[in-house]
Length: 258
Image (cartoon, rainbow, N blue to C red):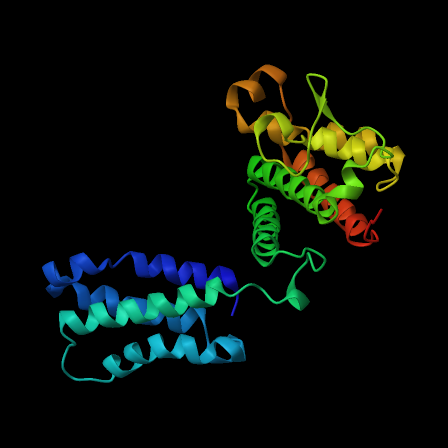
């Protein structure tokens, strides 16, 4: 089952909060029946991965049983079943996407890999929906995280004095292992470091920084306004294409050791 479908199911469930079930019981059965048809349309049984099927059915079976009954379920039954279904959906979403299905198979941390897969998928969806600004911002954030993750796999290699162009702040080298503001590497810092140390081909540097510096400008509307940032289909398409190209390069990089 697609994770985005699971998220949509969770959103549908949120339309019927428990605290309102008993108070407005006479209005509840209709929305609950609608929920059944939403679920039936969204997740046909054959689309559910085998490892999640039993957990999902543990919640969904309540709905199947009720729809076949001549009498209406009471409010307590509805609240209990909604809780079961929410738990099943949350459990499925809490399970990291298998590495074999991820577009970031070399990312070690399950949670970060899940976040990157989610954001890349959403960036591509934004492009299809003509949400140019969202697509550009997501592309930049995914690239920044992917660049960071590779360097953090072996921070000793990254911070070794033999490296070229380790960024600095007020004359002090930025420590990539620290998360405070003074040590944060910007997307420009990361791209420059990669190019100067042979991790990304040098000729790409200027085009990367020109295209992917836009996300930081777009976060703040006034900065977008002052710098006359380009926000259109062309800019979004180029950002996504460049992101995918760089992700391909990063995924093929060997692990660095000292």
